[in-house]
Length: 289
Image 1 (cartoon, helix red, strand yellow):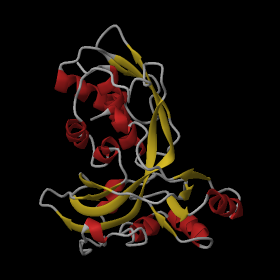
Image 2 (tube, rainbow, N blue to C red):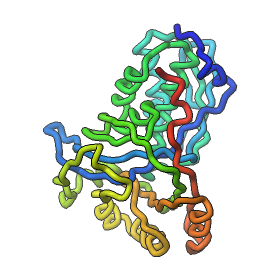
Image 3 (tube, rainbow, N blue to C red):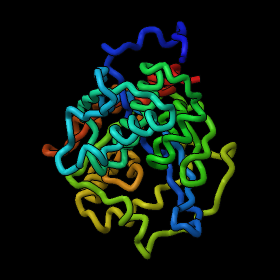
């Protein structure tokens, strides 16, 4: 069992555990594996806005989601699957009730479900005193989804492969305006589009700069979801903007909070948006070694 360290002693069963959003500063599709998975290069950045999770121990070994999402069966929810996978991997017989305060949209490209799953892995590894290493948690996370490992990794990162090969990035302070078009994007449909560009030239992580690259998925998503194109056009009229992930959310980067706030205030009424600081690391990074 893991001994509590000075770094994580503040996190208890009474704590609220954050699950931050991510954005893709660029996203290139460089190829496709024989199993159908796409090869990517991207830069992940965490934001100071996201979901919040609470955990309550049970007297039995059941994993119960107290706040199920509409249309998502609790058994297939990534948070439940993450907790049950931890139990299966370690033989843990402690159950848990999970409550999620959902602030990130479904199908938004902000990694909400993956971030929630990673927070479950990090928090329960700590609360259940399982003692799994960060690398082991990343391996478990990859079985849940390609974006889960970066949240366990805990650093802004340059990612390759299907998103699991990670190198830490030191990014300058920044603020972001994020808009949420009122659509849920089916990631598989975007990646499965025949017209998707799949031959972007790979670069080395050391050659990447914050102003480099585009999102190869953006044109497909905008063509299939006009609301994304409309939100992107509105934000692009005020600042350089792009889509994150496979959509639907779009964002723009600013050097200061004041600049971001000024742009947010200029957007047309009816657009759902918010601003957040770019984080230097995941708030739970010290929960794993």
